[in-house]
Each structure stands twice: as C-alpha cells, then as structure tokens.
Image (cartoon, helix red, strand yellow):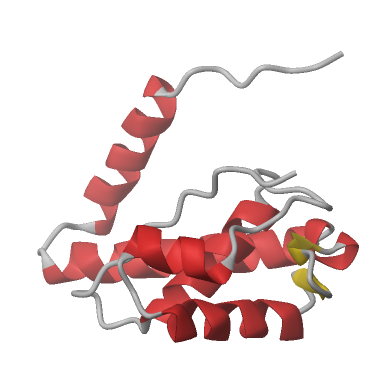
Length: 135
C-alpha cells in the first residue's frame, strides 16, 4: 500500500536534495511512520511533487536501498524493507543527535545560551499532548 509520504526540501540549507530525501525517509522509517511493506511514491511522482529532477529522487532511492532501508521490487515499486523498519534505537538516537547538534549550532549563531535552549525545550515538551498508550 502506498502511503502519502511528507517530504520537504530546502534549497537554502546547503544539504544536497537527494540527501534531504534520504534523511527524511530514513527518519520516517525510524520513527515508525513508515513500516515494512509501505510503498514509496514512484520516482517520477515524487520528483513532480517536489519540483525536482527525477534523477535526484532516483539517487536518494538508490542510497536508501544501499543502506537497507528500502527494497526495490522488479516492476512493482520501492518498499520499506523489513531490515529498514527495524532500525535500532541506536539509529533513532543517531538521527535525533544530528537534529540536536544542528539546533545547538543555530542557537549559538543566534547568540542564544544553552540554558535558554533547555528552557525552551522544557516549555515545548510541557505543551505537547500526552502520548496515547495502547494496552
């Protein structure tokens, strides 16, 4: 089943577009928003939606396949692989660490102290809805 995959690209952050797609798909899988067997959009469809060259999407998909996150099924599309859906906690922590590092660099560049960042995180966490637990 093909799901609506939310990918957002930025041309101003200096990260190659194929790598932005790679990282975002990897994050969607690591966070559980995409599961084993979920189909990624066809290359041309995603390229048209993002207004980019299909070769860029193809490169991202190749990188995802090389990393074991997705698998290509002959003439049937690209799907989240079983290996990809079981990204370990270590991988999820790695992705989160990269985001924290980027946030700390930005805060430093904006002359915002570490204590202010911590207070902001605490406020944002407190404002989040409680997670729904399944029993």
